[in-house]
Amino acid sequence: MKKVIAFFCLVLMLPLCACALAEDVLYTASVTKAMTIRASKSTSARKLGSVAEGEMISIVDYGPEWTKVVKEDVTGYLLSKNVVDLALAEGYNDESDAQYLGVASKELTIRQKKSKSALRMNTLEEGETVYITELGKEWHAVVKQGVRGYVLADPIRELAPAHEGVVIPDEFAPTPVFQALYRAQADVNLSIRRNRDPESRLLGTVYEDEYVDVMSTDGEWAYVKKGEAEGYVRGDHLRYYERYDPFGPMIPGAVWYPYAAHALEDTEILDAQTGELLRIAPKGSIMVVSALDSDMAVTLPYDRITGRIQATASLDMEPAVLWAEAQPGDLLSVFSTYYDPQQQTSAQIGRLHNIMQGIERLNGVVVPKGEKFYFNDYCAPYTIGNGYMEGPIINYTSADKLGPGGGICQVSTTLYNAILQIPIEIIKWQVHSSYGIEYAPLDFDSAVGNGNIDLRLRNTLPYDIRFELQAEGGVLTVRVYRAS
Image (cartoon, rainbow, N blue to C red; front, side, top):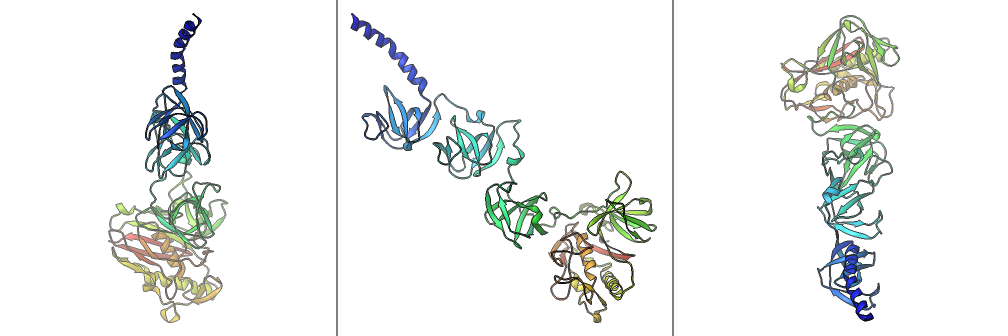
């Protein structure tokens, strides 16, 4: 009778054991080869059963070397290295669980922890959609087939929100396909970093004096590409920008100015910061200025600082027109630089004479659409025999030398800054030195001289342009018009 009762109890317990086993199953998976189910974690342990290649298995516990499985009425162990494609046994919806989506740029391993040596939970194929639950600088938390883990962040591309209302944080915002808008030169060795962070992953190096392609810059950081390395460098160490497409964005630092202000009477130019008197622009002079501010004053570029004119009633404002809207005779761009109006020394006299020579030779010049303009074709050679006088010249070694034509570079520099504001291709241009010149913003001067030192342009606008130049009482201004 006791045996009958014991047997009856055992029969009653079997369904309960089956339920317990079912509840203990965490994952399903498949195997890459036929394997033996062992009684313990050893290849010499007692054989309990077997699985065939490609067979689906139920997993109770998944470990780095051995996986505990249940097959029919057998519970035992398989080698983990042959277990693949882990999936949550109770079902899953990866897209619903995810906050973000990405694409694997190469085959990747999903790890149990944020470590390359951590337990492998699953794999991602190249081009596979990645379901991301949390973003990280080095590791993203992901879910695949309901199984959660971590994957290296760098190879994940094309980040996007998984659901409406989810916003990608700025630090993880995807960068569009690289488009080189400019090239610029490094003034020191620059590290290319994965993110805007000097401690982020190093991708490459731009060496001192080397040019690199630039897609964007905010001043502090620039997004660049050198070979296969694409990332961020310190933008404050990039100089001498040149744009690839004349119709693209203006180079960093260049400004389009909306007015040429004609002085109707002697006009004070003040330091915009201190209020100090910088100079008096004489009646009849023309200056580049910005729009009126809330105090009914205008600002203007003055050497390397910002000037200010308060008495705007003394100005007749000639508006510049955007190039795409300009009609024949409309002003397109304007720029001014300033020089010493005093004519007491032979150097001062010679310098102004040479500036006036440049103005005389360039004033009214028309550059037809599609045609090239070489500054030296009109103004060189810079010799006494060609009408020039001795004036101060600037080069890499000295700013105190005298030579024929000294001062003509102020004309080329002023023209260059006017040209930067409109879609004109700059074929050739160079600065005087890394220190620049005092009458123009740093890196925005344009040297000319005998030989190959020249300012060369191509008119890429759909119409002819005309140059108008004036030097009056220490103010040198270049205006560019749509030719009539």
